[in-house]
Amino acid sequence: MAERSRWSPAAIVEWGAIASLGTVFDWLPESIAYALGEGAGRLLFHLDRRHRAIAAENLAAAFPGRYSPAELDLLVRAVFENLGRTTVDVARSSRLFSAAGEPRFRLDGLELILEARARGKGVLLLTGHFGPWELLVAASALRYGPIHIVARPLDNPRLDDLITALRERGGNRVIRKREAVQAILQALRRGETVGILIDQHISEREGVVVPFCGRPASTASAPALLALRSGAAVLPAGIVREPGPCFSRATHGRPRSRRARRRRGSANKPDATIWHDEDGRD
Image (cartoon, rainbow, N blue to C red):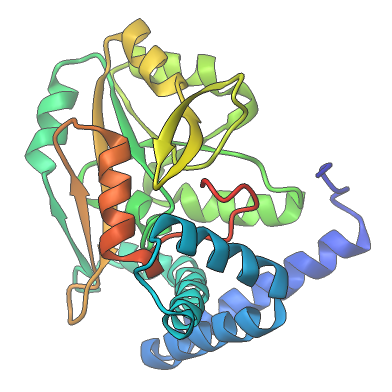
């Protein structure tokens, strides 16, 4: 989709609606905000038949015979509810940076990423759209230090500015995907850390086709090539939602097959993963 003009009526209305909704979610008490977020997800589940069908098809293909039609319908609804919770996560993420606030997450494996950074050749953190993934950036900035995040610009420039400002709190920096390679290499040469979401299906000309949940999926080869060229350490990272006062747990683990980690996460918490991707192999 082509980028819209910053001054187009559609861009202004979309930005105004989302910014206002974010302000409401941030202002409301936490329990009410998340209840409304989940309700918005359920509403989208009922209205967006196309993506609901895509999610159901993808889940059925990934877990053949595991769910009955009724269970599958409930699971797809839970996927949409998680999208609503993620929207609230973003709206309320500034609270993580409040000096007066209690820590809302714990960070596992911090010693691994500190050890990798001490090598002086930079660190590549590989993660995906799982759980409250937007909070992983904030958690890393607070407990580890600012990182760079590779992101595709949104089609709405005003909305892109809003989301970029949220992601860059705590000293983080967003690297635009269209000029990512050189910017990533420069950051790694300075011994800095770069986070990359690698779970979306990409062009087969740009990736490597591997089997994933019973289907061929083209996954990014760029992180491996960047690591070979720079000598950077490569670590998986993820975040899961937890009950109680510890809102979420961010984990930086030892290097292993990223495909195996994603498959295990999708199997254990299928409702925390995005399944309505057009390609069915996100």
